[in-house]
Amino acid sequence: MKKVFAFVAMMGLLTFGVNQTINAQEADETAMEQVAQDSAAVDSIAPAQEAAPAVEEAAAPAEEKQGLHKTIKIKFIEGNAGFMSLVAIAMILGLALCIERIIFLSLSEINSKKLLEDIQAALENGDVESAKSICRETRGPVASICYQGMMRIDEGLDVVERSVVSYGSVQASNLEKNLSWITLFIAMSPSLGFLGTVIGMVQAFDNIQKAGDISPNVVAGGMKVALITTIFGIIVALVLQVFYNYILSKVEALNTDMEDSSVSLLDIIMKYNLKFKK
Image (cartoon, rainbow, N blue to C red):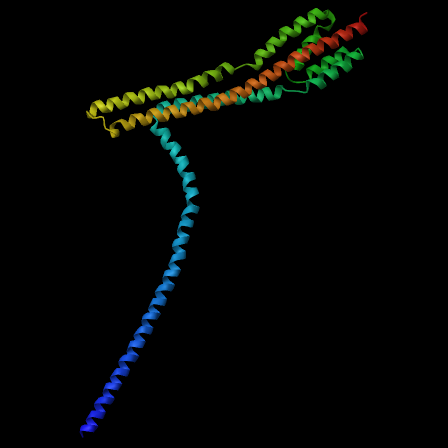
């Protein structure tokens, strides 16, 4: 009986040990499967996390574009709307005058060489009226000067020269029309900005006096107004100055063209007089 009990006990121990081993193996396999699932989950989350910055970067430009427009509006308001409005008005009026001058000067530019060739061809045939008609039908100051000369062609070369010079001065003045107003707005824009700077400094000192403290928070408001108005005033002046210099270059080119054309016209009339008024 003792051998039977001993055999049964041994079999029980062996069975228990095998069960423990199997359970341990199953637990290990379960743990390994759980780790694999967790790793897969982490791998699936990682691309999403990596994709998130890309989405944020793609959305960033749109936010920056909106932010720039909003920033300009905010800075315009923060820079004391009264002075900023004056600077904006100076910019609008100055740009309007610049655009008007550029359009006028562009329309005043013609092919003066071809005009003089047509006038010379008409005068070589003795057709003064045709030459006058060519001048009338052509736009620009050069054609107007030539027409004035043709109107005095029968009164002598000296009279023609005086007429051309006098009317050339009138046309030069017309080319420079409104330029003084543009220079006024160029000077006013930074001046208004500096005026805003002075007022911002006064506000800063008023805040210091009221608070009885010179901490940065007290001074920051007035200093911000001072700097913003100055920046906008200088920017407006720079923009208008660029347009002004471009306009001056066109005026100088037209003045040179008028002088050259006047000399050429006098030569053409002199040849006409020598040919038909001997």
